[in-house]
Image (cartoon, rainbow, N blue to C red; front, side, top):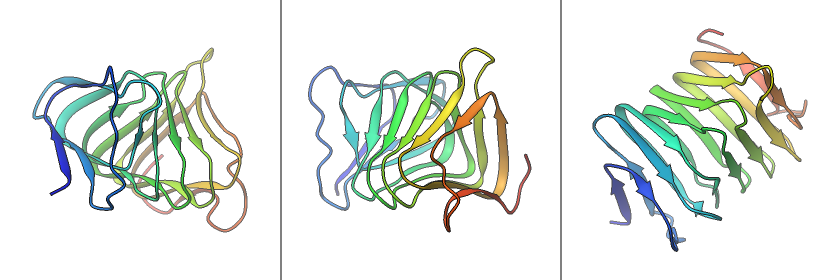
Length: 178
């Protein structure tokens, strides 16, 4: 059914090719503890879903999301852990739902490379929190945006570069708390 379920750590020391089939998904669904996601170097995912209540995922290497598909955190926590997540294709989103948490911490970067890319907090927790010597960063050469309809947005010691000011650009908080 084109779905790969990963109930533990993910470590790629060779080649991992996420097929171009539109139905292909990687679903992280561990049931407890702290897990590592080490995609290796130069890995591009398509649809990725985190469905792991109470589980913390620490990213161990840079990776990208491609081909108009999303990185969705339904349940569980993803710590970028000083790594870079590159969002490559127009209309690709990072979606944080009810009990999901996305931490862009000190030394971490989310790099948006195309138009109409976004982070959408729809009830979870978005943390854009660095330190006084190592910022959390969002970068983009085109316009990207952040929306929050509910949930919590934390921001301290951060930098948003290239966020833009046109329609579908900037940071819009219409619900939840800061």
